[in-house]
Length: 173
Image (tube, rainbow, N blue to C red; front, side):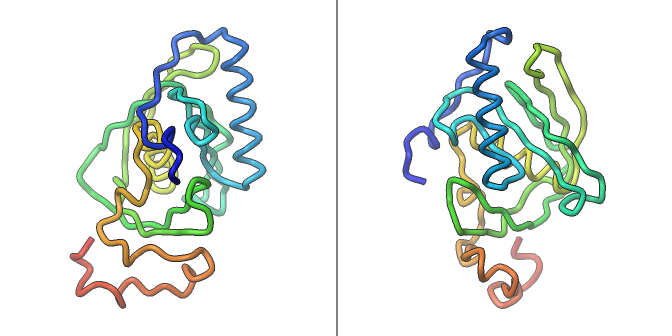
């Protein structure tokens, strides 16, 4: 946090056969796995391009593992108005977690690294990760989505965090 690249809108990718794009995707994948993380956007490694990489381990989602996926020029659209609060962390805000409201279900479209269009729907943890990473492409950090910064804590404290200690009711979301 504090790097200007994280607050700028990333540029769309137009050359899909480019060696530089392949190198960027490889660097992003390696960085995400080494973290270890479940998602990464190109601006997080100082590349101002609309590229995200993500994965959903079986123990983090709805039981279904989603292998590492790369989306270029991704677009997302909520499928309904239902939001849910969930813990999010970020390589750009180390050692912090926050309770962030996100749409439960989204439609997405984008392009694979080989130039093939892809579209689909995502829900639950996958939808949360995709929204988080696409936000990075628009210069938005998860703390910008939080309604109340009292719901921000250190990683080490998140297991003992009690939402109800900070809110008057469940309607505070």
